[in-house]
Image (cartoon, rainbow, N blue to C red):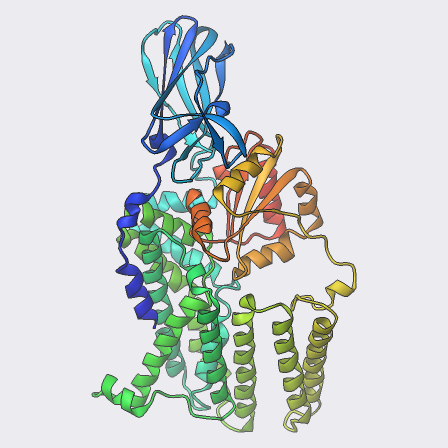
Length: 574
């Protein structure tokens, strides 16, 4: 299944790359010159299929004083973005700007345009150094930037991009390995731990440390290879794969598989590859062991597809590098190194398996039962993004109460078993009461009965046009655009733990909050993501008071309240 998905993506026609929209500096080529000692002339050459807005032109000068620009009339059209008649220009527009300066000065021009196909660009700043003594000398853009900011190595994304662009694997691989170790502790990777633990426990009481390590290596290798292949495919195709995989059918299939596998922990059947398949795959070796290794490898591959779809800064940087350079060697190597780093907890579980797991006795059966319950819980967690909020709560309630009753009746551990059983049963009852009284959050099932935390109020946008209109209506405030999806674990973390912080709420009061829900992954969602070169959520984009994107302030991946406050402070002071 996993290999088929990868092959389909890699073999998909890449010809649509030719339909990608031009970079803003290519779509709207800026140049400027002095036509006399008191007049600057600004020219935009506009590519075929693109146009610029008359009312979006603005000019300022450093080292000089500007008069009222003379902007020629444009063609009138009704614009869906601003819901009014506007004047636009195709092919070329020339603007004359009166200037008072002594010698050299720096002219900054701001313009905004769109493609006829529907994509609108953020306002773009272009600069040119001119001289009142250099009449007739054309000065091309010295720093044309969309969103008024360039790449900065002071940010995490800037450092990642700088490392990739260096092309030095000796620097790239250790960096991405360490970044992967950091990501291994996130909710996108941690669910793989109980899956592998259940596999090792399923080996029985005599599993050795070497056997545990071999199983963890097989699982990790499957995860790393598929993660890398999907990353390379996403970079080449230019579309986020997370949303494609996070649909009810894919999640439901994997959750069902988890539930079926959990039955082996309860002794319903013995988990192993059927003998007929083992015989075909591995004729010359221990068929059961080899067959099991292949099965574990496939499980790791499927985990990479379903359990870990989050987009973090290192992944976003690698995907962007591949999409721009088509260098799958550098980009793929970085992704593989990151996946190996993410596998560190899994490898530690394998190494310690022989020491931590009991060797024999009835106690081992209780451990297997626990991992069976854990796998059922993982099944509920996997499918919860596509279910109404009350249904996963009922699943947690059933698991908590059921496992609690089992532990209370268990005679093996005495009062310890009964105390833990009562705790599980109470947790299950809390979920049941929460669902019955209108609660929809399994992490805070009774919060609706107390004083709920104030939620951040976002204006939802569904398209590039709606986003541009929201930025236009900001009235001189900083704008924060949050990319969100129901299946994005880190997005929900940000919503529940970061956005609800009172200090963050205080900063939000001075901003316009806009949210793009890309759960559906439709054409409008893809256009929004493509505009900012994002491959999926979570991602937060800031715009300054003039509507220009602050690229250095981007937030990719989860940030806790303290770190996010620093991001907000940097955005608000711009």
